[in-house]
Image 1 (tube, rainbow, N blue to C red):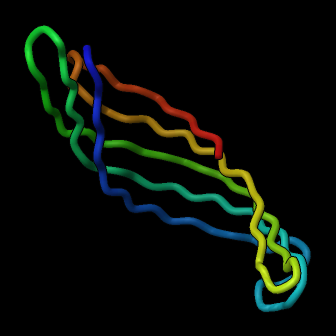
Image 2: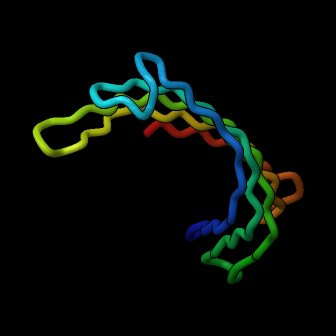
Length: 105
C-alpha cells in the first residue's frame, strides 16, 4: 500500500467550565472542557499493485481539554492540552477494517 487519505466533516457539542473565575473577568483563567461528536466523509487507499479503492467512512469522537489563559504585556497567551479518542467505521481495506485513533495536542 502506498498511502491512505481521509477527508471528513464533523459536528460536535461541548461544554467548558471556568475554574478560577468567570470568562468575563480580567486576569489569569483556567478552563476545562469536553466535547462529543461525529464525522462523515470519504477515505481513499492508494496501492502500488492495483490502483486505489474509495469508501464512505463514519466516525464518533470524544475529547477533553484543559487550558490556561493569561496576559503577558499586551499579548494574550493560551497554553493547554487536548486529548481525543475516535472510532472510525471503514471498509476501504477489507470488510470491517474499522480503526480507533487517539490524539494528544
